[in-house]
Image 1 (cartoon, rainbow over the protein chains, first blue to last red):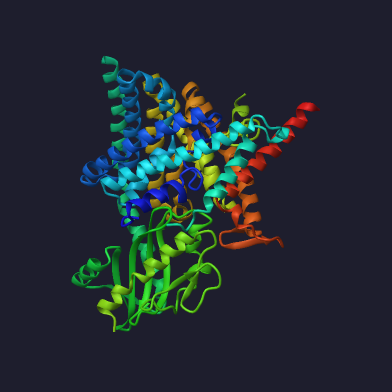
Image 2: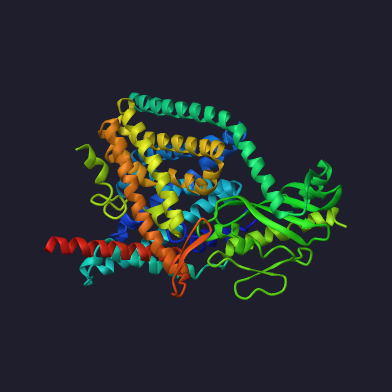
Length: 193
Length: 190
Length: 200
């Protein structure tokens, strides 16, 4: 991966190794925030923003603090603090500067702190030994992959509202079956890169 | 504002306590962890070069020369028996599906494999981590890396490895890492 | 009273099958029964002790920043457990090592910290952690056993095959789609059972 081109990284993160559908990271918001397309899209946008920022900040923290002072064992704790601080910061800034965007994204922001996909992407960037540019591209692409999955999922679930589902399958079971079918579809991308 | 500073400093306090505890644990466990990793390495070396009786590190200068060609290589030792060089054991780092993956490769002087094993890795349990099972790694001994090993999802051919079902990425990563050991033969082989 | 804190996580309030939290590992590592049990037991230990720690540090945890603090406690604790196991019980590390980093991002642990440990005493929190951890283990065992049997036609443990069924191997059950599908079916069966109970 360290030598892979940018396009390969993008395609791989969005389609082939989709975080939700093939790596199972960020399942909680994926299942919880996908009842309506609008909410799903809002969550997706918030994730794109936070994940890209988190990718950049954790990259600097890793290179200039952890690696330089040989404190790699603090990585997870440090990344989590960065993500938590970042989310709080974004919340405050949005509230002041862009109230309209805040009212659209605001409720999703606290949920992102606990979204394991954000920590996952930060750790993966380091494991793949990406430079700054690739880190940014990869983080953003993973987030776009998340958004794609959750919006597709939500649009199918919305349609399902009107359908007559067997009682035992109502709610999560039928949603998981849809997720399974989506995952099958994404399996088709395996081997593309 | 005052509130933010107060909350921030409490969080910072937790962070500092956490860092101190982790630092302490790290210091205390460093020695035993290094030992247990070295022991695991030794066991793997014996597995991939079963005939050898002792393993001797190669010259630093040779290692550096080879690392210049393949930066993934971490370590090379000479596998010896009764003073005779049987071959080499090469430890290299590669990227699997779940992140970095250590591959230990044993070869004789002409580039025929004597064995391979996986070291630390983060492959998916039940899929990619099947690469550390005999069904997969027992396919390698006798194969020739100078001409290059291939991966096959169906029936493997002559110099080919049968990919692990559902873990083609891992299989290919292992085979690529094994093939990349060829630089060692080019540098030191007979 | 105390006993019910321990037992209610097993079935009645099972974290995976009833509360639907901590789904990431449920889907990701249930490829074989052996992995399911390994991950489950690792979570029991971590969840019990992290609940205890969260409960003990309640008095210095301001409400507004409790989530980041929980996450720091959990991450610190999990990292320490990981290092100690690797240093002193390398054989256990070999089989459980891959699960340890995954536990940090397990929302189940955070969910219990938030929903229980933050508002209860240390002993109750410890019991809650053990009960919920065991409930999680039960769910993982059910799902992983189904996936392994459908996927490979057999159950293997520690490299030895326990039994082999004469059924075709459906690899896709071990692949990601199978995880979603099996979980869906297990939840549907659970719903059917509880629906019947309600009607009766």
